[in-house]
Length: 147
Image (cartoon, rainbow, N blue to C red; front, side, top):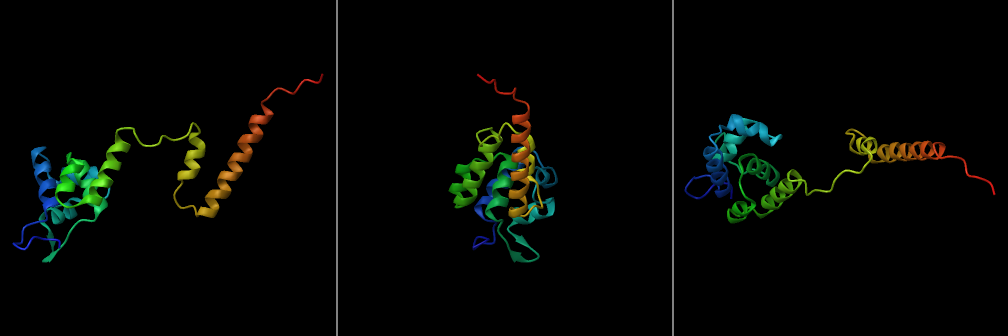
């Protein structure tokens, strides 16, 4: 249920709003930090309603809002948003450098992460890159000595 029976916002919205206010941030300050919502949507989620209907932020949105204002995952758990808490834990792991690190080949990573490629095209591009990279490495090796 998006809003409590008494019309108040859901608990996670209250937690996020208090954290935002404690940091002396407006929704206009905080929303861009999520990278996924604007200040209008932030206000709607905090209020628990939009255009007269009850709303509740999706787990990923709540997690990014929480990350933007310093909410702890345990606070989301306590508010009944366990999945959002798990997403927030992953956001914090990645932010703190505990996420898997990219390989030592940034050019290959760039191809792998390129948006707009189908899985098939990505696989082809990576195969071509790998073949060219392997050929270049072999060409740079000194010739084998004959005994």
